[in-house]
Image 1: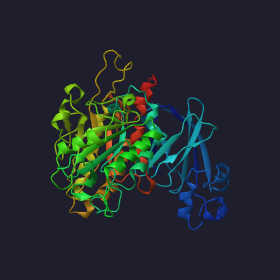
Image 2: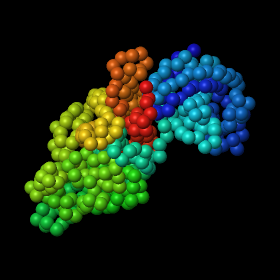
Image 3: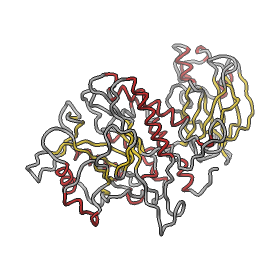
Length: 492
């Protein structure tokens, strides 16, 4: 007999398990081709059956009719928001191919169901059993741990619209990408992304890490900034320019004015250009107050909506040090410690351990990422009227930057895609199963988390590969506790 399933409610809504149903995996010959799934072999049939898409899976009645055995049990397991439950519901009772169907009910009476094991490691949307449901939920199942994580489904294209204007950007859990435009045909050690910047934006990414090479320092009118990764161009088919990327981001923001994009810019490449030259080019040829945030402090979401928030990883020209009443220009991330596991500098607190010289070091990198998640989780977002008053607001804290990226140019197993293939699933698993457990964990009362349970800005490689956006969905989902607090509803 198998072990019981563990369920974690990462949503802002109480959910109650009301019904447990079990099905034997059906024989493929019991379902004709027009049922919408392949009959080529039992494995492919079983995988398709587990899909909750009504267009490809048999109906509940059809499944019951065709299954070799069927049982159901009424239960009443209530799960408050942000709680984890090691249930007594066995994942299987008769065979390893058994399908476990769980039906959940919300406090408002709506019901949703999910089948486990899910067809793959990719998340599945729970099937709503009532018309016009008030909520949509997503599940991620981890078969090795027999663990089911639930979080509220989000429209990734405009997820920031749910939050109050007073929310500082530092209080949000924000998906980001490392060397964001490096999706082109390039050296495998240079390419860091699977899809274009616009596709990243459409799927929830709100932080771009950009590296540029200025043109000739002798020509003050030359605004050219070429996109690079280290000393290499990001494309083998011709140079790509910063101007085109900026236009792409601005077009997205015009179509989605509730959103904001933080853009970190750093000077790299060859030649004799300087940071001061880069700062002058950005000031004179790119930024304007209608489309950019260049003040030297973390903005609120209301101040940043529809704008690019410029984070500088470069030194300023002397004239820009006196901007904004002498306070400087842009968010300051000029010079954090190289290869750091944890460094607080300027407006950022950073984990950027990047020298994974051997594949064995990937586990160390994963642990450092998880450690930084917990630092970010302890932050309480200062929102006027909630954690402070509007006349004496608490200043926004630093932006927690957590780089999941790392590489070794000389070792194929440590190129960005290879590391991401191991690190991204491990991080997704950690966030769903273990992040910010506190006194609501499996082992009863313990250390109590007082923060919002966020994760800061998570800077990823190779998200969206083969349409897999689960890591991004999970990061956005970590905003649930803050969102619940902003709505003025207690969660304890």
